[in-house]
Image (cartoon, rainbow, N blue to C red; front, side, top):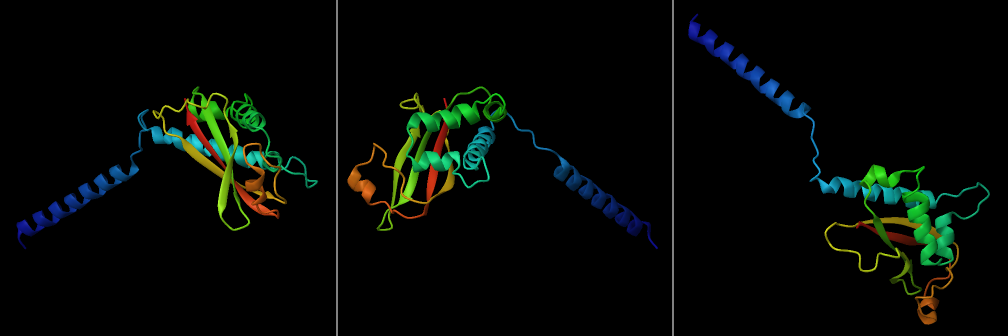
Length: 187
């Protein structure tokens, strides 16, 4: 038996242990997110917006009444009511504190639209709501997020003032799912 064989064996075991310890340290380290990781706040904003739409589409009673979101879409409600409910009742509500936990004290603007299916099968949309100060406030400095939610309607909603009667007559007048799409961005 030569001593050089034992030396190579001990050297191999030591190298193997070093590789295992290095792999353990690399895999067990935590990631540190810095303020430069803006995609994290965008993901938080998107999650908060999605949660708000889900809560708005939850019925308040079990008696089969429509949810707030169904009512707003079915009546093609004015921009003020949807914006007030989305921003004031849910996002900026002091009991919910969604804005502070997601995006700090930055103001949020929204633009909501509804996508529906025409009688010929094509898709069309109309604006449901826009923040009062949203027009012209998008600077392009901060990326926006889009949140969507499907809403079930039994009949065609009432006609919004922004759409002509001829165009509105092309919408299917039967139960269908419409897509509520809300663009959100920080100012």
